Image (cartoon, rainbow, N blue to C red; front, side):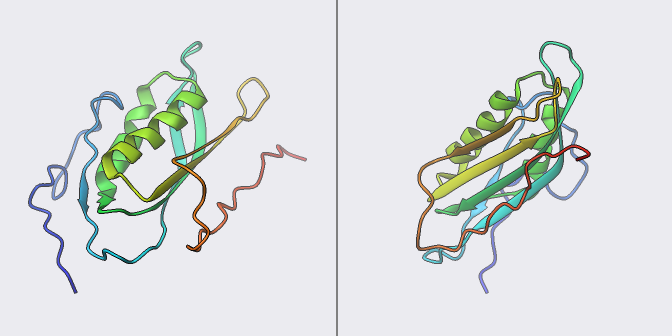
Length: 154
């Protein structure tokens, strides 16, 4: 078993304040110690929140992030803090969703990454946003995200 060097990480091992904004959030990474192995890493954030940039009312979403690692893995506490930084950030659903995907792709340079952002209704209309770095690889098992379309009470 390979041990991952975590000495460069700045947010593990103690309390870390929530960043003031997603731009200020520090996303950290660790080496992918299973080079050559192709598999999918999935993060699910079922209680994601941000603010409407017009009304400043809270928006709620269910995010699913899947990626095939290249040489890096995202450190999960830094991801949690990054996502939490949106809590007081005003942006449209599309902007939040694509920004998250792009920041992770820039940090990790993964073989492939996708984000499915399933937003609860705003103004009576649910908005789902999907972004990926490219086509889904055909030779790796990538499970469906399994989030049903919004149905309301029906």
